[in-house]
Structures are given as structure tokens and as C-alpha cells.
Amino acid sequence: MIIIDDIDQGTEAWMALRVGSPGASGMDKIITSQGKRSTSRQKYMYQLAGEIITGAKAETYQNGHMLRGTELEPEARDVFEFAHFPVHQCALIYPGDRKHWHVSPDGISVQRNCGLEIKCPSLPVHVEYLDKGVLPTAYKVQVQASLACTGWPVWWFMSYYPGMKPLIIPVERDGKLIPLINEAVEEFCADLQKLVERLR
Image 1: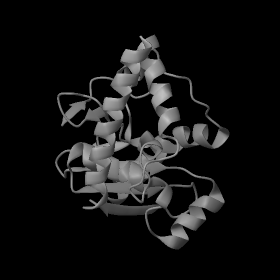
Image 2: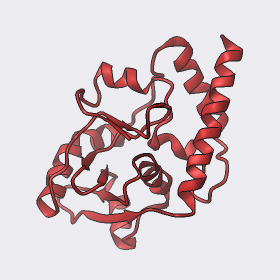
Image 3: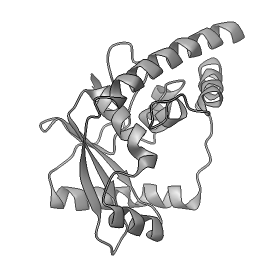
Image 4: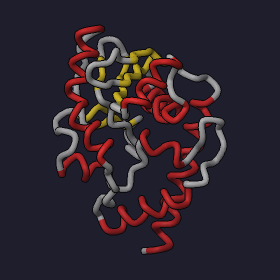
């Protein structure tokens, strides 16, 4: 595992590191939470191949909820730290020297061997998450991919909405899904490399 913490997320240097690199947040475009091949796999591969060839990160659409979530993230992180323990911000983490995929955590604690994923959804969605009290299925692959990337035993998930109680839960490793994620990302990266070689 390689932690890059000398640059900030959102900067041009951070974007450059992510060019052509599958991330944990995009892992559900490679594999589903049931361990099956995602129907978005080919489109995601085309995106990353284009990034590798052009050397630039593809522009992605951000709606109002996504922009609001980015703005609220520091506030949410403060709430998490007050309730639990301090977390450190870093640019991204690679699983090893190959640096062929990554996770960009919302916080990590190296001392506790864990990471943090923060979501700031709309009010009704946050209420739904609170009511169910479990990791939303939509983020299962992302969180398990983060655990696969780092090798850590726990990844905390937080849903935050101002004025509401937060949902903060520790998520442990899924012994069945993680090997499937590792296998899927290796196959994806190999296919991605072949595609780039064909197109160049």
C-alpha cells in the first residue's frame, strides 16, 4: 500500500494522478455488489483509455447535490472526529508499487488501520439511510474496494445532513466480495492496457 499525502484532493496534481486509473468510487462500473460484471464496464474502459491517450482526466458532470456534498464534507468530517477519532486527509492510496488503481478516501487513520467514506445526500435519502441503519447497497462496492485496496479491516461510512443525526457505521471486510473485486480490477486493467495499445 502506498499513501500519497503531499498533495490535496481536487488539485490539478491530484487529477493528474487519477488519469486512466480506476478508482474505488468507479469500481461499481466494473463489478456489481453481487460480484457480477457491470453493464457499465465497457463505457468506463473507454473513458479511462481516452484519458491515458490524451493525458487528461475526462470531465464528469456534477449536479447540485454532488457540489453540495463536496462543500459539506469538511463539516461532516469535523462531526465524525468529534464523535469518534481524528482522521488524516490524503490525496489517494494505491494498493502497491504498480499503482494501477486507487482509492481517494475522505479520511484515514493509519494508527487505527481504517478509512472513512462520507456522503452528504439529500434530506429524504439521508432519512432513508438513517431508518435502515446499514451501509447502502449503492456504496457497498466502493467501500469494499477501499478495503481491498488498503488491506485494512474496517472502513467507516458516514451519511451527513446538517441538523440531522448522522449515520456513522463501521464496515468490515467482505471475505467473498473482496477477492472478486481484486480479480475483476486485474482483468479490467489488463483489458484496458490492451485497448490502449490497439488505439495508439
